[in-house]
Image (tube, rainbow, N blue to C red):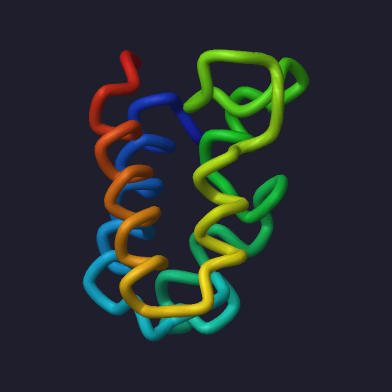
Length: 98
């Protein structure tokens, strides 16, 4: 599959909206198989990192670093925390200009 920026954004939104809706999921590997298989072969299991290679940091951040909100989502110990950071990521991906 040829991944375009538009397709990367669509897949990313699909994944993070699902994780926002089901905050009991605490790792991407626990996504339903159909969703996980879309991102499994990608760099960092992330469509944005795959398309942009993330050589200059995360495309959702305003500075040259990793994805702070993803790291916070990974570190969240509660459903509420994971839902919060998944929601932030969804909004940032929506705002990402492709």
